[in-house]
Length: 476
Length: 104
Image 1 (tube, rainbow over the protein chains, first blue to last red):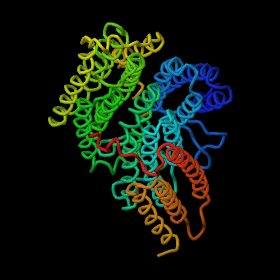
Image 2: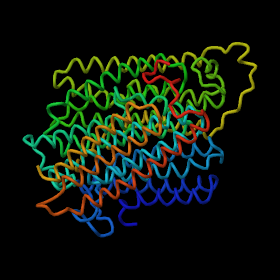
Image 3: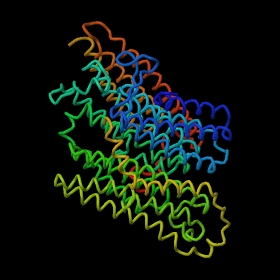
Image 4: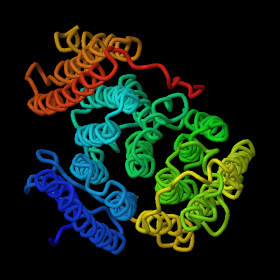
């Protein structure tokens, strides 16, 4: 195992297949062991990348680009690989306790999902990225449909069509790019794409970015996200909201920074405008949501908006890039924690409405504390990772005199406080007498403490900000 | 206009028709078929544009083969979900209870 790159893709494929053959009980143990090794591999890869200072390459099967397929890892890829395995490991512990051996489909699908995501972060050519996008999309749709109810199936189908249209647009873009330049390698394309490129290239770039924005659930394309993320079982919602939407965002950022940089200058305000709209609309819907999971899902729509604010601010000072990287990490940890905590609340009270959490403060202090800590990150209070991300974003906006963006960022933080405190306030109220008589299940300690660990990590990651920013600098 | 360009233009038209179908139609089977039309359009562009001096280029053909495998897998998944939904609800449309803009 000298080279971690291929093993990060092979290991989840292996344990996913193993979990399918062995059944959920032994499969879960296999998955946990595999993910722990992947986490270690991701850290080893990050150490290698930051000491080398450039991107690492791995020719698959000894056949490198241009004939074969090259895998590549730079600082940005290494950061997302660590985040993915770091969030997945506690979530799998959570899922094992949550499903208690009754979910034959979860472990294989989760393995294929992780394999697809790791392959996406490591791919170095546009077509390979298309295949990994589809792998991630199909595995995620399978996970959404896992519950098997009509509502969940409808959400899964809506999600499937959104993701298929998104990757279809991306594929057409790749076809046009190949037709013009005769290559799909990102490194080879970077010097070829210039501002006086033929119209087909502009069209292709627009198609690819629009398709990826649909997959990231940016504001007008967000309609599929709340039912899909809000309707799935809690561990699945956490995986999807924390990680899967970040995969397509990673790809947008990658394309924006490298091959399409000369083209995207003219339209950089567009994603920021949509991102701002997403922050306001998503937060407003989260404030109005009646079901807990819907509230958290709408909050994902809002928090994804912040990621798109960085595009007009990207520049030589790299402040906006750092803010984006930090927001990806902080939101990934916080949203996983929030869905995990909400999963415990729903399991214990047996209901999904915000109004029904009344009185849980006394019975589920750890879970509620986890929810609150994750809320701190979403609101952007110090010392959380969310604070650092928003601070750098405001800094970058002020440097360019974009007061309008500062207003949106601060308003988003306030609105986040409103929907987080809506749940917390309800939790401290006394339940009505009828509620108190209802028999409730005792919370499972593993569920509570994994949610808490993720939430604590989302706050503490702010203290390790320098390491994360240094890793982002390596070869990006 | 070379034959390759004609194929590519036909591909773009097919793709646009397919996309409109996936977005606008109600019947699930029609939407799945429209998705396949969309994929075929993209493949036609890929094959049509990539001809260097009248010689076919083998790389996009390999890509299209991979793309077909992906499209078949996606179609199978969509059909399985649609069948299960039909068994549960008796209809081939998506239930509208959760409104698209979230105002349910």
